[in-house]
Length: 270
Length: 270
DNA sequence: CGCCTCATTGACTAATCTCAAATGGAGTGG
DNA sequence: CCACTCCATTTGAGATTAGTCAATGAGGCG
Image (cartoon, rainbow over the protein chains, first blue to last red):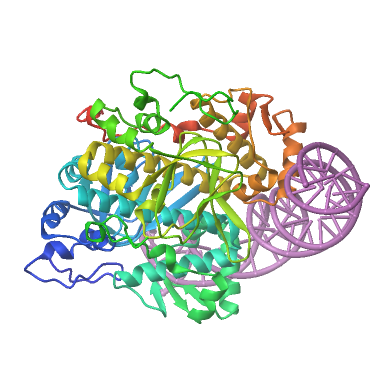
């Protein structure tokens, strides 16, 4: 809960206010993005931040098939969820950035259906199943908010699916970087000119369903087209608007509002 | 609620028991597949079946961007959810079969982020947002079950994503038919030798991220390999086990149990 | 019968993968 | 400081998969 002094480029630097730090936690921000939080809701949320843990680069948070369900709230660093296939290839499902909730789907089932590992050093708070159970039985409004966060994740997976099915390699790469840029922007990292990106071309390829070789070639092409560069851990957008048009990037899927939050009850004009 | 007499091949034929028909509704079965239902839970579920409606072939249930949130419980027939892209192609996200819940994600947001239309004639019960809100505020156990159903859908989308990213055209087709066969088997339609399938090759292609032309060629190849045939609205598995091996089909993702249902609390042996 | 949609086939093209190898920086031990 | 390894990146050449364009066939329906 103390201010970090070394200021990793991947860490959240919260604008702390000593009076109610609870509202400033990464998870509270996440929930706030889909519903409005009352003060009553804040206590159980703050509770979720008791078990802060550190993870090294490449460390596994949990593994597919593992039965002790865990979830995490990512405070700083990058992680990814993935599945390894029979033929040895792996598919990265999602990249998790600071503020993201990891493993909600795992916690709902007896066994995790995917693995999660870190990409950088990571600070994360572990959330146990009983914490969720408590939220669900004691604060139904929060339960709906958790459901909404889960639905938002689902919307991102759907967009990923469409990317893999319908976009060319160059569009996939552009689209991913635009999405990451926007998501990082929301937690105060990077801006429209670029962002620090710790991914290797292998990880990029595993997410995009390409070979790293092809990914490399397309990165060169995008550089030569004057759209973006990705070198030395830094993404630079050379022409943001041209890139948005090129990738046909519509950020709508990142902007959903929850329809069932208490403050919109009865607010239906149709 | 009465027994249907014409017995469409795509309809559920429930084993009716006059005493508690509620437990036999499609949605109750769906919920039962992830959690155990108490009698108290059954009443609000039965309530969801008040608004039974009929839909013609190709009729739209709701459209992307539409703001009056609707969900449906599919009683008989097939439907699909899809998104149409800027370039005019469309991606089918899911096929919905009898017993499936349609539009849960839409009902959670102000606007639907995909469209849904029927593939065959359809009987479905409309579920309003206030029904869900009632469930969430009054029966938290049911809320968790709804969340679990939603997570199960998410697991299917993830598998679809992996299919699009990592499997060849022939594996995609085989995998889809195996999945549909298993899902239909669970609601009493079809078996390991095959099932009635109302899809056109265009619809198959739109789901699989292929052109219909290539789909057609691969269907011929699968026929010539002696694995399966799909002709005249009928899928026939010629060699089920060989097909499972060929498609590397692991039905685990269709078999998740909810971990948070009340009757498994504290029931973790590992 | 004429029209329509869906299914089928052929010939060619384009995107991506596979195999192979060279480059280059970061760390490590001598 | 240098030699060495390790790993990510970069490039080339050829193979494979799937898409595009074009045309034909088959069944249903007014």
